[in-house]
Length: 176
Image (cartoon, rainbow, N blue to C red; front, top):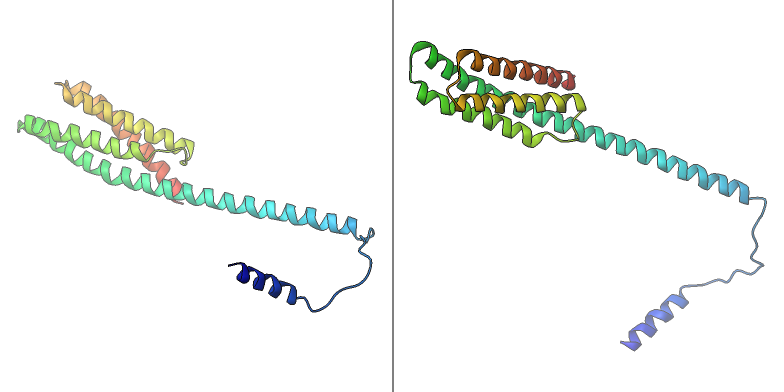
């Protein structure tokens, strides 16, 4: 082991083939230009870093918007379909008891899926609209948990529809 280290040490010394003579000194005339060059380099690096971070943040926001908007679109469409089946059962004298639980579950499931994807990465107006829709959907699910009057049910569903429209409109705007 010692012999190997000694050999490595000799190779390192043997690698130098010339010696420079002279007096080491600082060229004081070049110091200001060097300092300016270093400062400019640091400034350029900071700007480049800032631009890259802005691009990264924009990419994260775009991905978050696409993900949550797709979830809202698909899961709320299924909830609407299921709630419409409940309404059809009520209006036609069908099996309301069999239709109410799937409608309530679809509203709550969609709200849960969208809620799980709401984050600070989203633009504030979209985040607020999505939160309003989640709250409205959960409230409508609670209404369906009881025996709502037509007015109570319609009020809850009107709120779901209005908040869904607002959120989807903001999603459409974000995609442009």
